[in-house]
Length: 167
Ligand SMILES: [Zn+2]
Image 1 (tube, rainbow, N blue to C red):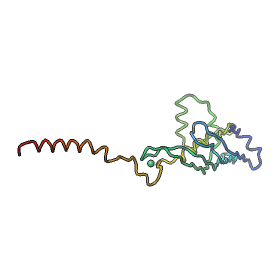
Image 2 (cartoon, rainbow, N blue to C red; image 1 turned 120 degrees about the horizontal axis):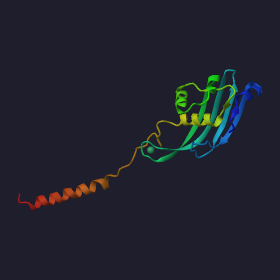
Image 3 (spheres, protein in one colour; image 1 turned 135 degrees about the horizontal axis):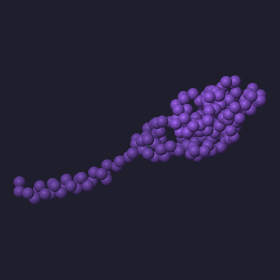
Image 4 (cartoon, helix red, strand yellow; image 1 turned 90 degrees about the horizontal axis):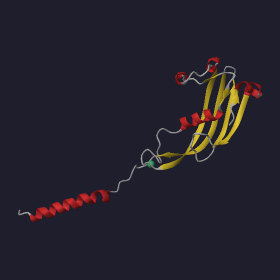
């Protein structure tokens, strides 16, 4: 997905660019390409971004630690504010950290919107925090027989010893 030059959107019908998405997203391990669509509309002092997409990812069950496939569905929208102050030169890690503290997404009005970065972030947010291969997952199975037998043998030895002792 190519970066969108924000002023270019103003020349489009309804100031809207719709992208058909059918590709792997860098940094996100998925079994299938991310498929769907992403819409960016220029609303003057902000961008209205929305996407419907889905893909399949492999998750690890928090209970039994088995891997399983999960269909990740995305239906997200966000407003990205256009602000000249977002255009200031990057003065290093300290400045970047301060910018990250801003909860509101901001871009310079003459800058670029990165659809793949946005999609990546939204998909990461859509990954369930509680990952279970099945709602009924019983967790890690421990078989009784193996763990019990050494103990049993110790008890048997003790019983045999008791029998040998004069009562
Ligand atoms: Zn499980």
